[in-house]
Image (tube, rainbow, N blue to C red; front, side, top):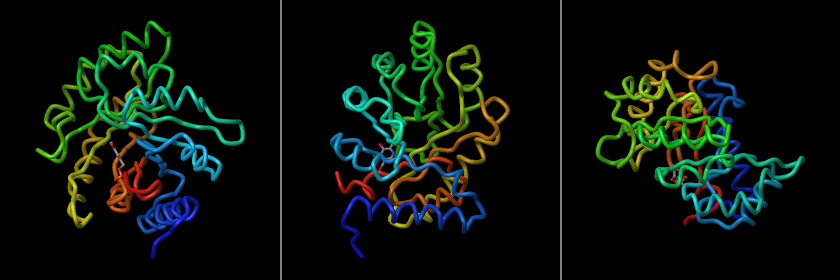
Length: 233
Ligand SMILES: *Cc1c(COP(=O)(O)O)cnc(C)c1O
């Protein structure tokens, strides 16, 4: 069955998220959909927003700046939330200050240091997730699981960064069940750093178009879905 309109695709994703949450005994309100709008025009974001979608994910700073300049925080009826979901180059850190609600991929000490400096200058704070590489060689970025504890410790002086949880990019797989161990691993790691996170429970950003149901059953609080909503890139 091919759903054709944006509304049909978005509704289908909401339904699948609700079903996955319910199957695993979770509240659907605890699973946030980030509609990954990278490469798609602003009109696509406006259209999804009009259908009630609030959170959008971008992975290129220049594109994020362009879209946030154009759309801002949305309207009172349809507010917008912005997520930076991919690797962030250190020299672009300054450009995201004041623009994003959640940074998903804090992946180096030097990036943390630069963000701290820029946030302090702007008298601002930033909610961040630490990207962890639980997939081995597939991902170029992310903290090694064995180094996570020490990494969190190195951030403890950076009072402008609020560490909220973890994020990962799972390996690409034909069968989403194949990545379940990676997602379970991320959840387990998040429990280990829970006492150093801001908020009641660590957030877990994992799951994309091909594997978000497995991610939800393993505890994802944020799923990042692009192509299943907006089409192939
Ligand atoms: C593009 C992207 C996604 C969305 O991927 P889809 O397969 O299109 O759902 C999720 N997370 C990150 C970090 C991405 O860059």
